[in-house]
Amino acid sequence: MKITNSNITINVLDLDNSISFYKSLGLELQNRWGNFYAQMKAPNLLIGLHPTEEAKLLGNSGNVSIGFTADDLNHSKSMLKKLSIKFNERKEDGGDFLHFNDPDGTALYFIKPKW
Image (cartoon, rainbow, N blue to C red; front, side, top):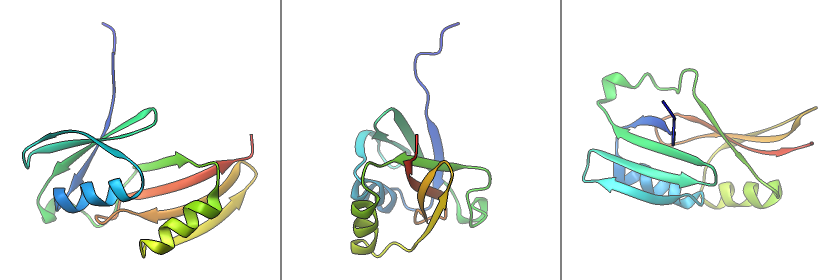
């Protein structure tokens, strides 16, 4: 067996709203199958969005966290502010981070690594 591709699937309440959110971050809509599933593409990462019932979302992303490497955190910070997305900054030995959530509470972050 050879794995030829992979993705992360996120359960979302409103597929259109989530597509719009991820597009505002710079991801591209790669595929969409009606209101059943959509794929958003970031460099070297494919994220699947899957509609679900609110009862199945626990208000957070559990153990899922998706990171996007950014070359300019000041630009990323300005973009999040412009989009009215709340974020927290964190610095550590490995890099500088901007942590934020998508509309359904999935943990996301931008990182400017120090390596």
